Figure 1: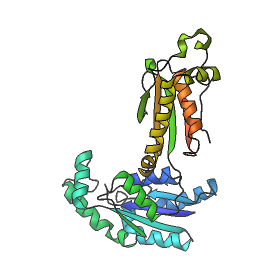
Figure 2: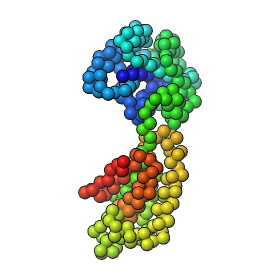
Figure 3: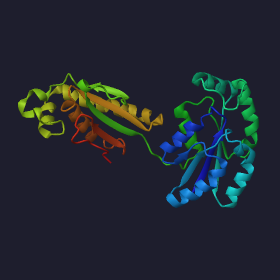
Figure 4: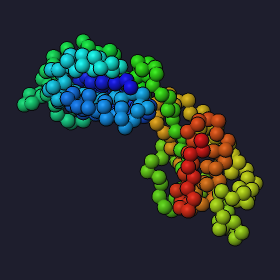
Length: 290
């Protein structure tokens, strides 16, 4: 098991990095006291013997860490632990801006200003920084750029990729809160008004055959597929864990369901992480396609 200690200046992105590591399939824990590290390694070795990497966040709030970092690193290396220490930093003006935006106090400011806290923490963590295996300056990085830079520093990170989720819903029940984009299918011919199709859903072939006779339906299907395929490289490059495309019709039973099912069939080669969810079909929810 490799131990990755993620530390650095408050506001430099430790929690964001831990979240990115967790998204990549790593076990990630934050705010771990130095005195518990070795116990934690022993427990994880017993409980998760196949765990490849454990990432732990440590910072200056536990005074024992900066004061005893050298001793801790020495003990871990003596045990044969594969250890990397990732130190996150940022410029003073960026840190001041981040604390101003979040309106949170700096953990080392005490009765002083945020600038005072930043200066104290820099001085306190300087010995830790000198022992760092990797140093990452997050000053000018967006979230997606930070993920890319992290991948460059840790090229052996598992590639989880982005999940594409096709969610169907009925407008009369409200929009899905998790939707990244919503496609409205209510203008398409509605099978609900045909007695022989009313009790069926878009998963039934008879409903699909009916809808496929409509040029509006086939045009919708082709354009939706074209748009998703066009934007997918940009979505993946952004480092998202998932991308939710919601498709709605009036009741969420016929048109939206048929569209999502047929889109999924057409785009099975786009990503191995394709999920279809029919929100209004309570009795039969669809799950991962791969």
